Image 1 (spheres, rainbow, N blue to C red):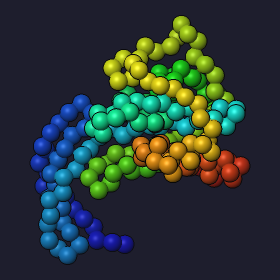
Image 2: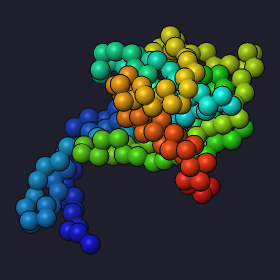
Image 3: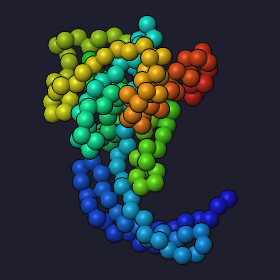
Image 4: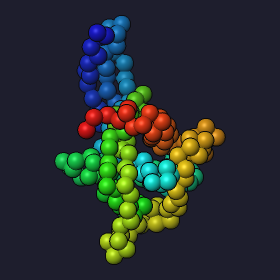
Length: 192
């Protein structure tokens, strides 16, 4: 068991709708105290939607902090308090790519940037895909208004990761985990 780090004090630097920033004074292993800036946010869900032809549903979306469009997986913030994460994943799948899934399994969990943020992301695997009826489709606005949706073979998605064409951390992790899970006959999927 390692040293029990303690937060001695906390100062809020910014509070926003999606995340907040704090400066914590934290005890270090050598007995000293150091300042650590921390970004707290709600976390997110990400969905690897895999169709019957072994294709992944990718979206290309503009991301302002990096100033370009990125290939990603359908995803969304955990912004409904108390909502089961599987339902959040199903909602995001319907809203972003007009699909439902007959089966949704937890694939992996990850911390995206634990050096400064507490963001936790749960990646789901969605299968048995079907289209949302046109009358029930979500109207996409803001940066989602021009989403490019494409189905790409899972092995090609893996190649895209290694060519640097998929760089979103959760998408990289999700694609690689889905490929590994498929290659083991889905035996590595966590228990429900």
